[in-house]
Figure 1 (tube, one colour):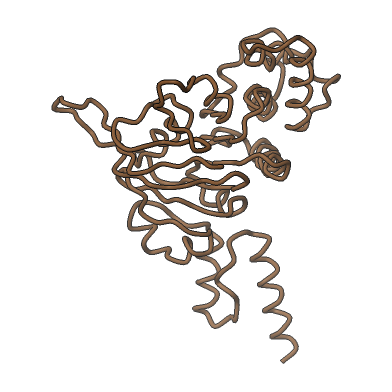
Figure 2 (cartoon, rainbow, N blue to C red):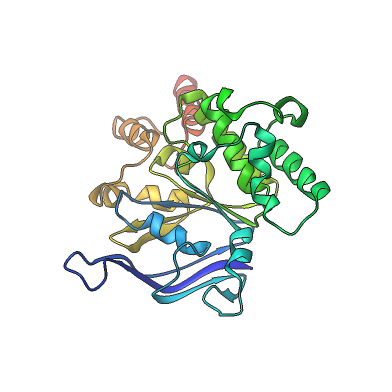
Length: 286
């Protein structure tokens, strides 16, 4: 069971002087249970790619399969694909519009052929999954919440559809540090609960902290792929295509060049702190 693309290509303004190839023969597979990051600078094709995952854009060339079903099969209802693959765009809180949190989160399930009892279960499930106490939050206006809370409500609205795959496009954009940490913590917990997560982000730090595998996009192609340690090891190549690396990577390399015996393969502040303390202790023991 997976999201799979095979030689997927897509053009904007095809046949006009403004024609742009947004995707160029992209082949990948994201298996159920994965926690995958997709990174690349603006215009690299990230957003166009993920919109193919739930049929917002249909393939012009190549194939997209969701759990072995080609999304262009005539007998496949695209509505079913959108239930399987939940897509959370940047600033999803801008789409909140109901007078209570409950009504907002229930909006999607109400369009399914399910009874009110099941809708209630789904709203409760989704709100609790993103860290709210159902009774405390359900009757509040979404517009009275903090930025991070609004975003969690918006994510709950997608989760209430019970997707197998959750795609998040820049989920921490515009949040303050507290809201950012709140969202990242919930995303990690969502994956631990069994949901496949696909995280699209410009933030090298967020990707390093969370995902297990990375696809790096550049000019519509998959330029690099591998584990976070494999990708960030080649920091010069990332910089060459306009991306950075987590600041921790540069710090650890600088310490190594100064003669401090540290493992430069550390990606997060927590890992680096432990490694630096370990190196300092070993110096004191000498």
